[in-house]
Length: 283
Image (cartoon, rainbow, N blue to C red; front, side):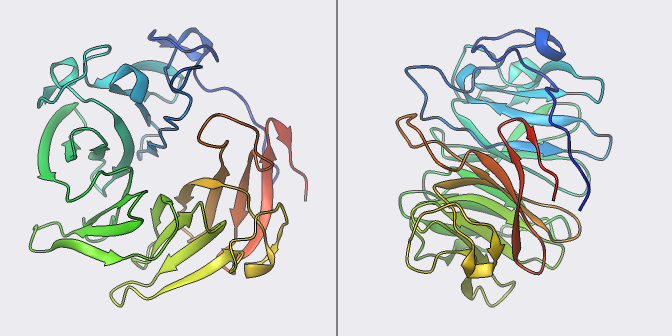
């Protein structure tokens, strides 16, 4: 496993709004009043542009490969619902993002209950209204199908690309948060209350725990499959090889959490630690 060095790509560490390069930029991810937002939208396109949901500023930001931050879509400080290009669009709480094979960005808005498609030039269009409050999403790049989840009902919805199907495909989780899709079309979600990572098999939608406790037991243990332990896992991403990355999260009130790291789950379901805070992990 290679070594990783953690560095700041963009952001000052202080909540606010400012475009600019690197640490001259500011985002509003949380503050002492809205520390529960925990927006988890981040995707990277083929040109290595990074797109981030800036929920506190009601917009989506773009970070190019040189670390230059700009507004991709949305009107900073002006919540609402409107299609349009760049700052002509309006979002309320853009919470999660997905990316298709053509580098179109998709966004779910937890207040507007919609799914927005944003083309590479920043033009945002509503393509569907969700059936529940959407908090996280992912896109199957091979098919263009969209998946989103609701934390409280803990259900996963599928919206087929042609919109011929839009309904629940899986449930029974406790606080389903992060979502990811692998190259085979399998869907993964984090059950924050289950302290586990679940797999939802493509087409059959059969669910199983692939990493973490089967009895909701919290902890911090690396290991194979269900021998591993998580404490309030939140974010989830998949790479092209089918490996998963799980981000720990503080509690809903911003309190302490034993798991403030990024964990790596090899496709064989072996859980390893990548980072704790900004410490380099050397296996």
